[in-house]
Image (cartoon, rainbow, N blue to C red; front, side, top):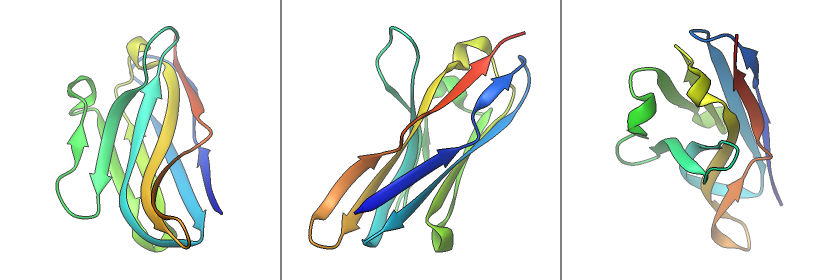
Length: 120
């Protein structure tokens, strides 16, 4: 059993900042990648940022220079620092992990989602 717990969403004014976190726990052997996606009302879920254990970090063009993804491997936690927020960033943000789990092999799992609303 693997659990992902997200936190850090909320309401913020344009230009403001938030920090999201997502902690993974359970029978995890190793982590291949951790990342963030978002889904705005009426739109498809899209990649925001992903950080593999090996390889380069990737960002959506729309967030480059404003958002920063980071990981604490010891805590199995991924963070997303959101700066210079815009109304267009309003969405539910989902953590996603690509992991190897006891008895199941390699799987992807989603967090429960956290709402980010950017509005004045």
